[in-house]
Image (cartoon, rainbow, N blue to C red; front, side):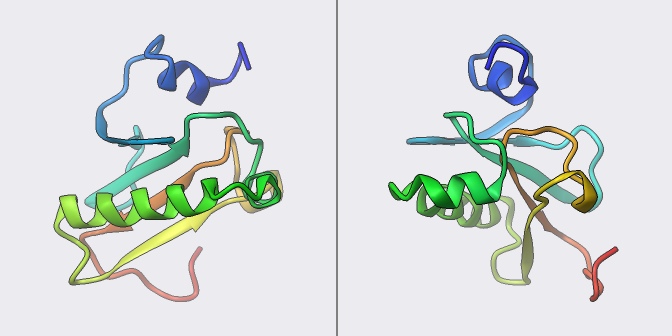
Length: 114
């Protein structure tokens, strides 16, 4: 996708603070963090949302979730707890239509979420 911001970050055409690159996934800091740890994890290939990622059915969703956990370990929030959020569709708050997981931690996270 030539106009996709996250595809451009994956291709290193747009700068981002990359924290992890693992196989088919890339993780980078959110530019508007909502917690002390707020990292986005994306598949390197383009899928519009979590439903499309799940439909790919080739183990890519597993790779993304493993990368989320690796980020939590690396960021030091794995033991205290962290949240993984996929927003799917504009009604859920998705603003970039390249599936991405938000890894949030480093503070108490209330329930229910916003």
